[in-house]
Image 1 (cartoon, rainbow over the protein chains, first blue to last red):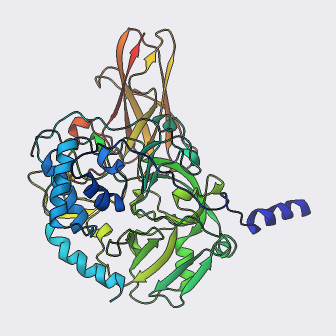
Image 2 (cartoon, rainbow over the protein chains, first blue to last red):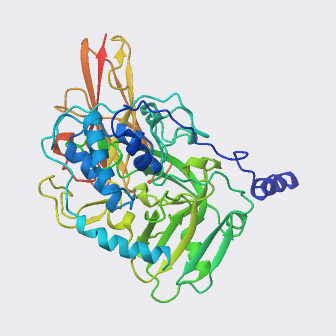
Length: 102
Length: 399
């Protein structure tokens, strides 16, 4: 009985974290298509999310990419200038477009 | 102006764009998403399908779904904002309960584990956008395969007990939950969720343990909210604040994210979006085949045991039917239900192939209320790509 009690105390009393020290989330070097406008994409888009978010969508029409950029600005408050929005839309359409406008 | 107040006004200002569409109806290309199991390992995780490293978006491989409990290291991960704190001292971690309460509380992890009744609930945790990539044309949101889900035994303390300890004031009707992930920009909305008091029952818990271990860091260590039966959008991770209010606050992740057309079919078309939306809330009936997997070659003389999991919002699964003739006839699978009504029901179905060539297995779950999964072709489209529950089909080659 005494032994059982001790085990119970040990189970509830000590609080050891499963992980020692800081968590490091790995960095993934995505295979990104380099081209006109990429530095603008890097400066604006990749501040908040990885390039995985782009690749995850597959190839899409220009209207789709423009909608995504609009969502980032309107809903998530990303401070992307009108000029940069156009550059990003052109980059995504050029390298991750499906050849369609809509 | 406080950050929250600013958010309220900025979100009201952006509400005008609701109802616009970024889609066109003729986008019907074959999708080629990365569903490869990644070589990169994330903290405390086994090999997963990785959609993003920041914020981390990790999907469970299909082989996970042959068993009723999902191992912690294979449990899916979904964060909304890029900055996740890297370390907590479990001895110092506290959650605050404030708002319309008699007594504001700061509860340490230790107090949570020792000062309240400890309870356990096994529950399916499924992202509202699980299986989203099955929708066509493409919808908004991360294009998940079928692995944005898992089922675990969660241990913790009833939210009700904590609210009772704080004491609710008159008019208390909403509870807001905030976690510790933060955005890159000050103006980006916080990931705050709100639930009405009526939605809370005794199964809603603040969990600190999953399958007998600490929550993995990426699953919300040290404390997360668990709401059995509900899609996991409101299962706030790294819970920091519980705020009781008398009024629903208009917040981005409540008013725009995780909502679906407010009509009977919960459907719309890209060209005719339905005017009003509602939160996705409770899960519909669904099943997934974990084995075999699409494209596998199976030996003709071997008995194949199809295995998978089925679940709903807690009404409970009554049957899983399997078809091997493209839905002409259905045969009942064997069920195993040992973790309660909010958990996965395991199913298995033995089949010896009689012919060589392609063979398709289909699985259809039916719950205790008689609700059953629709064929994928009968699923209505919605702009956010939520609540997909079409009958899962797996095609193998018999050699």
